[in-house]
Length: 363
Image 1 (cartoon, rainbow, N blue to C red):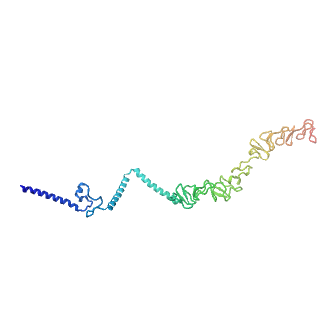
Image 2: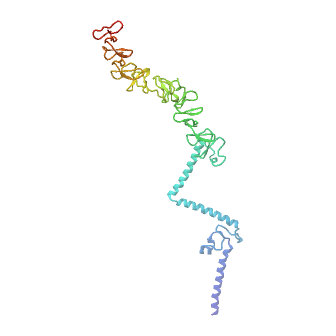
Image 3: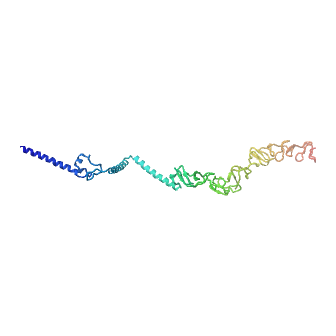
């Protein structure tokens, strides 16, 4: 009976020893990263006693050195960062992706603008912010933060680089611009800079629509266009009259205009006056000794229109008096005549029984 009990016990111990021998034999194998080679790792899901992920222990069971561990950590972080970036970009909302596209487009536009500035003469973009800002003689344009060579256009059309400074150009008394038009408003680019349209050029001509032409000076042919004569002169017929001189009409040239003829009989008064002793009445000129605007009035030389024809009054136009049987025009005045002891009237007439004697008196 005891013999039968001992046999099972011996068999049990044998099985236990065989199992242990089979299990610990795995420790003689190097770790390859394949958890299937380690049954206990596969069943538990981890290796608490194994080397770091991605590292392999030596065949002799030694641990990896610190440099290998650091290199493996760096590689893993770079791999994870790239993966995270791609996942974030893929998961970003449409508007974010659009912003990224816009930023890239803006960078491209900035590059295009820089290329355009370079084509226009802008150089050394990075030198405007530090000293020396630009090469000698060139200009640092504060608006574009770029350098422009001397005598070239700056970032705006009405500025040119001169003397190391971007300064205004294109207007009268300023420098000519580098691009067309060199002078604005029909002005001319002269040797001294811009000349206003209508002003005199250095060659003695006149700036006429952007061209200095030999015309418009005093005594010269009138230029074409509104500014026919230089410096306020007047185009009097086909020739220019200097400002302040007399036009053919007898009027004074005033800032480019010759007033209409005036002062002569039948014309308008010239500032209230008439030529050759004429009289100004109701804005019109009457010749001296001529009838004025109404009968019974005559232009008294160098004076005005006055009543005429009666005794002791000036004679009316044509040296006549109102009553030629009683008055006679003598030396421009109507004097009584025809009575006894008076002068004979016109035609030697006397009143009553008087006769005109040889001495011209009625007796």
